[in-house]
Image (tube, rainbow, N blue to C red):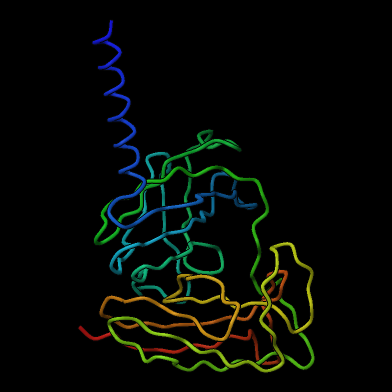
Length: 253
């Protein structure tokens, strides 16, 4: 009996080790996997999750799921650009930037249930996460929910530290705008809020001050963009369109 108990314990430990290895392959971790059903198609889901990289810069190559018959990485306006997670940095797959759309098989993904998703990275290989069908509302950063103020916020981007293979630091100069760190359900205060930072369309995170540090990047061409948002997560717009700034740069080998 003791031998049987020991054998079962060893098998459980081995299974847990394999599971943890799949969750954290090398330096990449996937966190907060959530899928929200499209209002136009009950078999189509928008996936959001956080990619945490504790190692060298890595590239997201593809996505797949055995429970879906189609999985696509969407990156409007940056088609063909590499999706890079900086060294010791994060990337957020979300609707206002690069994200994943999946089409499930009928009756396989009910509300509250889970399905597996595998993301393949150039260095870390395949990393798995479970996605939950989440009926919670998603923050909408689209232009249909934009906010305008008079005078409108303006923004200018400059380098605090010039881009090199070791990383870069961005400086954001604003007018008619105050950075403010608030709760997600905070009310709108005119000309106040935060910024979202994107690298080749991938959201890196929120910005609550005038500078933003980015870790080492792989050689290649990049577009770094910043968008101003209100406390209640609506994008600011002016007469000329969204309040967005961008810098284009290259990291040489």
